[in-house]
Structure formats: structure tokens, C-alpha cells
Length: 128
Image 1: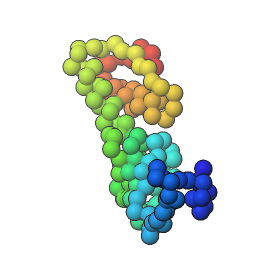
Image 2: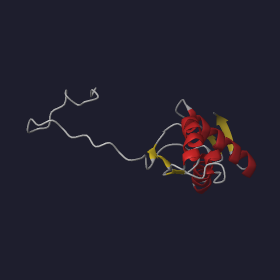
Image 3: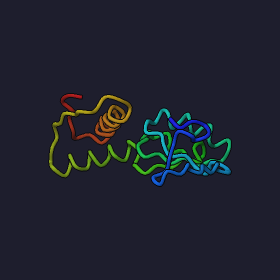
Image 4: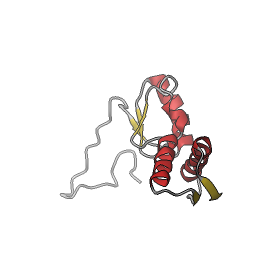
């Protein structure tokens, strides 16, 4: 860990580094988990600081009135579930099993797929 004064760090040429303190925070990248992004977004919006998540997929984060300073680079679970259903339909499958990683991302994705499959009909989910 870098100590406060940076005395334990040296540049390649042997000089001590010069640490510039930022004037202000211009944005936050993260978090990966939707639950964490939701909590962080609620705090950051008070200060009008933008947040970009690389993995948060919870549909509630699409509410631009509540999460007006939040953005993500992945589609929400509902879009991914629709894409999975489109693939199943295009392949002519009507009996499928689901498998997901443990945690919010995988489990929420499967839940969204099961829900949209039930709403649209025509696909039987054997095991989830």
C-alpha cells in the first residue's frame, strides 16, 4: 500500500512520484453487482456524479427518473432473456433446461427467461 506521502514508492528512474490530488470526482465506474450499483447510485445522484456499470443488469436500474445519473454498458436482464427466447424459438426448441451461475447476475437472468417464456408460451422449461 502507498503511504500518505508516497515515500515508499519510486519511479523507474529512482525519483519520487508526484501525486496530484484531483479537484473533484467526475464519475464512478462500477459496481459489478446490481445490488451494490443501486446503493451507490442512490448516493451519487445526490451529488450529481455519473456512474457507469460494466455488469449490473437489474431491470430497475432502467428507471431513468430514479437512477438519472446511472448508465451501463450491458443490457438489462429483460433484454437478455428476450434474446435467449428468440434463440430458442429460432432453433425450433420447445423443451429446454436452464443453467446459471450462482449469484445475482445468473439467477436473475434465468428468472427473467422463465418469466418471459411463460408469458409468451410455447416453451416448456424442464429444469431450472
